[in-house]
Amino acid sequence: QGNCLDRSGAAPTNTERFVGSWIDTHLGEECAGLCVEREECSGYVTEAVGECVLILQSEFHPARTDFTEEVECFWRRRFSLNSSWAYSGPPQPIPKIIWSYWEADAYGPEGAMIAELCAASW
Image 1 (tube, rainbow, N blue to C red):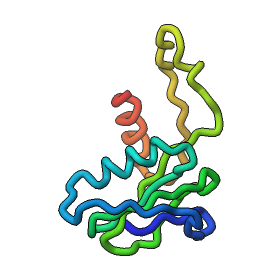
Image 2: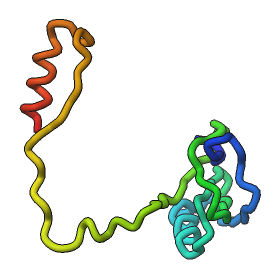
Image 3: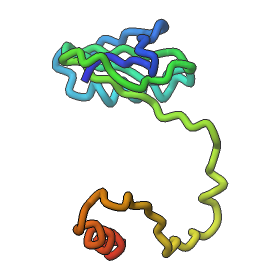
């Protein structure tokens, strides 16, 4: 809930407002579509009165909100590395080893039971 802010708490400076109908039940989908169509769009904010604001700054990375009521922040996921090569070809086997670290007395005598439960659930 709230307007989009970056890690430093700054708001975006380059935005564009889209106005829909105040009874528009598909506003979020429309705004998401508008954002996907524009390469520089890094997210959008929907408002309760049928409006959304596109964030048109590819270098702006929404990371949190300001908790403004009746406003929702949505951001586009960007990845620094193109890892599509990792998923080409046949699927790789899932490793059977689970590495975990437990602080010696963090869970008291129940620690061993918790570890066994975790291992059994895998």
